[in-house]
Length: 125
Image (cartoon, rainbow, N blue to C red):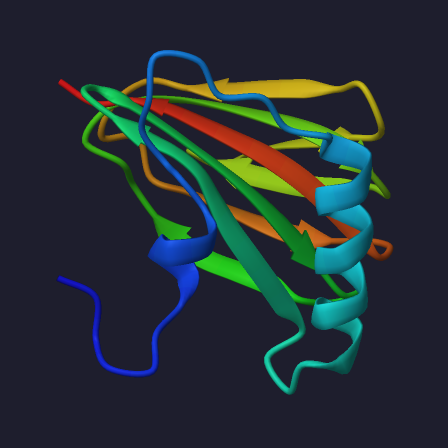
């Protein structure tokens, strides 16, 4: 049950047989929130169904996602900007259309080199 005053689940379905999203519109709204946020980031879960998790996240330039790992394999697609990913002593920089993949339980971090938006898809075990 959603918390009192919380409208997210009433206004956004994250499960269903067919879900469709306008990534450009989602990304534009989130980058504006990230720019205004004290944390420099904003995110929205698009899908959370079965093993599939899909989240769009926007980061203001210079914002870092500290090292973390996911229980499932992860695909990160850069929609806007440039993002530096670090894992196991190596770095990958990706721009729009670039995709970086991490196997399950692989620690990684990310830093926005410009105002950026990423689509994160995780296949949970």
